[in-house]
Length: 87
Image 1 (cartoon, rainbow, N blue to C red):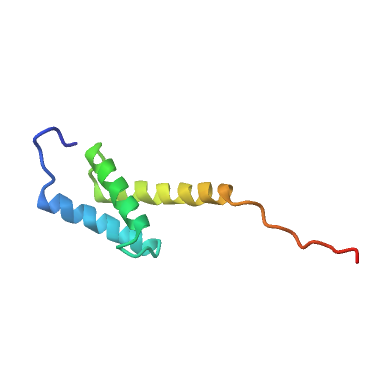
Image 2 (cartoon, rainbow, N blue to C red; image 1 turned 180 degrees about the vertical axis):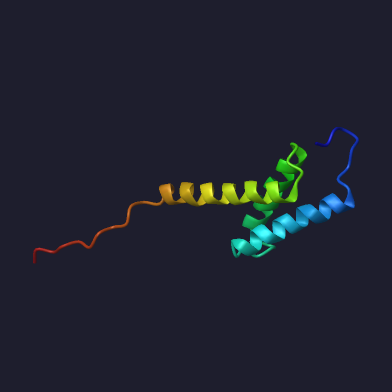
């Protein structure tokens, strides 16, 4: 965990970039997309809050993405069934 006055070291920054690249590749997200920016922000937040291992960060991000897919599916209106015409 970082405390005031501490910095992210170059090896940690490279590890965070690997996590983001891997997660983006798995989800077919372009690295310059808004979704990739959100993903990177989340990974950094996890890191700053104490999740410092590459695999645990990747696992946490995969779980977040799975939950997000589920939440997005719940937000979708139900599919409309074909309307039957009585003409």
